[in-house]
Length: 141
Image 1 (cartoon, rainbow, N blue to C red):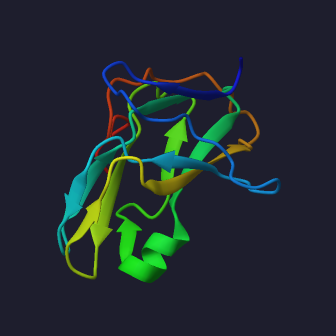
Image 2 (cartoon, one colour; image 1 turned 45 degrees about the vertical axis):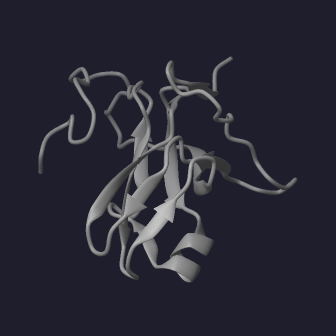
């Protein structure tokens, strides 16, 4: 397989992401654990997943719109960008602007969309530093 998701060891009882309708672009990601999101503080929500895909693609993560509209939840970074060389746990930084909210294990919380991307002339995919970590692994600022 060249594109997909894997369940990480130690995360039992979760499902691989699927598209819910024939024309859905996104794969629904579920919470792998119960997490209490407190007001105006970032909470990290584990998915228990990692993704794999070709080097000329990116996995974009968006919070489900129903959580934003009904519960005032947002991804702290707006859109999650998962690069092809990131092979670790997909963890979502979620913030609430509407009080405390409980995300329950198995709740569909985000959508992942695989997308090809372009580079500028002379730039080559796969040339550069080697990733060494999770959040901020390509530099702090």
